[in-house]
Image (cartoon, rainbow, N blue to C red; front, top):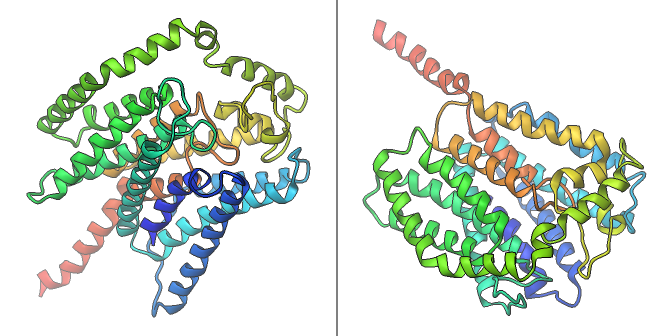
Length: 403
C-alpha cells in the first residue's frame, strides 16, 4: 500500500496534462478522492488484522506538524482565497496524506513501509518523466514537460527526488550479485538525465549538492563506490554538456532581463513583501496567494516562487516560525540519529528541498511534503532507539547463558 500511495502522490501531478486539460480543478478533486480511497482501504486492513501492535515511536517533529496543520485550519477563518470550500479541500488533502503515512508507520513494519515508500517515489518519478518525454513541449528551449500543465521545474523536482531515492537503493544493493544493483544504477542514471534534460536550474543545483552530500561525503558509502559514482556522473554530464551549455548561454545573453531578475522572481518577491507588511503576523490565510497574491505576469502565479515568502504571505510570522520549527526539528532529529543509509538519504533530501525552496514553493503545505518529512524522520532512528533492541536481546540471552 505504501508503494502505491507514493507512486500516485507523485503521478497525480500529471493528471491535468493527461486527462483534465479542459478542467484542471478536476485533477485536484481526483487526487483528493484517491487519498480518501487510501483511508478506506487502510481502515479495512486495520479492521481485518487479528492483532495490531504499536511499533514506531514518532519523533518530536510530529508535534510541530500538528501545530502547523492546526494553524493552517485556523487561518481559514480569515483566508483571502476565492473559495473557502477549495481551500478546505486542499487542507483536508494535506492532512489525509499525513494521517495515511502516520497510520502505515504506526501499524506496519517501519522498515518495510519505508522501503516500499522509496520504491513508490522512484516509480512516480519514472511516470512523471515518461509523461514529460512524450508530451508536446511548448518551451522555446526544448525543456521537458508542459509550461501550463506539467512545468519543467516540477519535472526536474520530482525526477531529482526519485534520483536520490535510486541512489539510496543502489547503495543499499551494492553487495548484491543479482540484477538489482544494475536496475538501481540504471534508474539513478536515467532520472539524473531527466533532471538535466528538464533544464530546471534550481533542480540541477539542488540535486548536485544533495547527491554530493549523500554519495561523496557519506561515511557509509565505500571509496570504490564513490569513485564509480563520480565517474558515472562525469560521463553523464559530459554527454549533456552541450545541451545544458546552449540553454545557459541563451538564458544569460538573449534574455538578460530574466537573468538579472531570476526569471521575474525578484520582482514577485518585492511585491509580495509589500503585501506581507500589511498583515505580517496572521498573513492572508491558507491558499490565499493563488487568488490574492501579485498577478502581473502572463502566467498565473499560485505561489511566490520562494517557500519562505509564500509561508509568510499566507500564514504570517506565526506560520513562518512553525515552518522553521519543522525543519529545525527534522534536522536535529537526523543529526542525533545513528549513521545509516536512510539517515544520509533523509539529510540529502533536506538539502535538496531547502535549495528548491529558494526558487519554488507549494500552494499548500511545504516544499518538503509533510508526510515525507514524517516518514524519513521516523525511519532514521536515534542511537538510543538502535541500542534499545540490542539491550533487550542481551537480557533475554542472560538466563539461557546462566542455565
